[in-house]
Length: 233
Image (cartoon, rainbow, N blue to C red; front, top):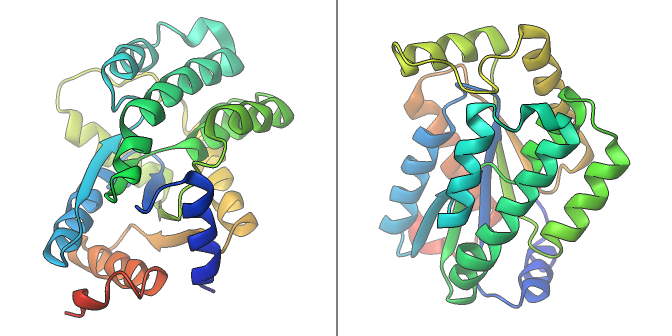
């Protein structure tokens, strides 16, 4: 079921911004970056101004924290310690890029957002869910995505894709986790989708790239029919 247009308008009013906020989530190697680029291109063809970004990162200070997090330097802090650093990066990202872009009427498309903290540090990392929820309330506030595309893929297939993409480079902090971690991660993302069906759309990421892109475009048009009526193609 699609979220009612009135709910999306209410979210935009709560953010005091006319733009739309779309996030991509999923495990390692699910194809988020590729599908983000494809969606951004189609939105631009439909006359939408798009700002594409990523987490952790997206702003200069957040990119510094990204390097620390993905290198594993923060792993000794434990799952909740990592979550706090992700939260710090997210605050700067929101303040520096996301909120101003939405206020200017752009659509922000982001590779990962708060759902990744719930899944990676919460469910898979075993940080206490009440602490993760409290952190999200403080950091995100009304900046909840209007639409989240969850690219669902078998963890073994996703890790194989990630290794092929990296070539000879070492795995990052999370790609290097055991398969059990990535299996728990997939379960966590699907649980989020079940809990918030009005916001999260699950897309089978095991198919051909163009098939996935076509489904994402159809889901996006269905979620925002008024804004994308020019995008009938």
